Image (cartoon, rainbow, N blue to C red; front, side, top):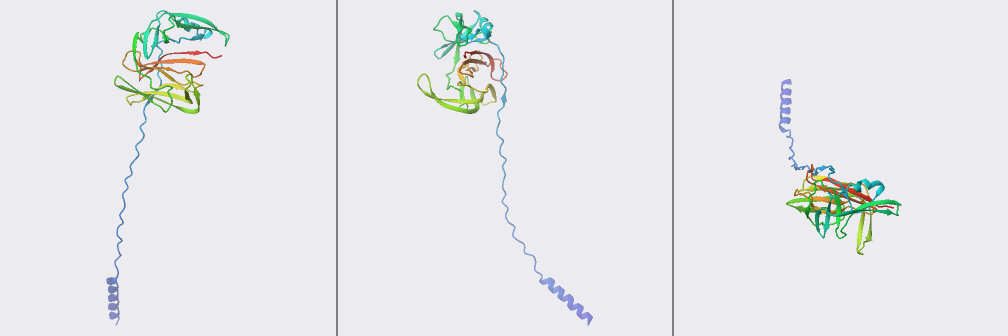
Length: 271
């Protein structure tokens, strides 16, 4: 009897095992492969610092305060040259000059200056003859626009090379005014002004760094080859105040990068 019960139990277990349902496999869900592309890092142009190497003494055809500039003015002699403006042309030559003195009634001080004897001549400035700038006519390009506002880069092509002047700064004010020709113009006041130059899309070099202006702005006076090396040189009016006249000459020959400050002169005629 016990043997029969055991046999029946084994049979029941076998039957249950045979009828047990196999687990249903769920269909595999398709996983969309998303390709993540890394954003390219922005290309940052190399910026090199301003280079200064004084090789010429400069005098503007204006009156200087004698108390501060007498020695500077009196160093000019017959060997000095003048950069003359003849219409849209520029020429370097030696000219006759005269040294004059006057009383500045505004500040009750004596003033001294150097001027051409021939009043028809228009020298941009006088400078010492150091062979950095040789005599003769100078190749030059037409100036595209002045002032050199931030956000308005200028491109000049010279002897197969492309030069870009790019300015930046923080605009703090602007207003509309009428100039001597009764034309309305907009003046923009910038702080922390910087001007850069680059050649053929290469790295930039800092040229000008001016903290602020008072009713003035950077003017481009000359774009051309002053030193005869086949590269562009520049002359800027960098007056920071309306009662100041300042001029800076940048040459390329012998520069470590693109340009260097070769000479400058500043006249303060404030009352």
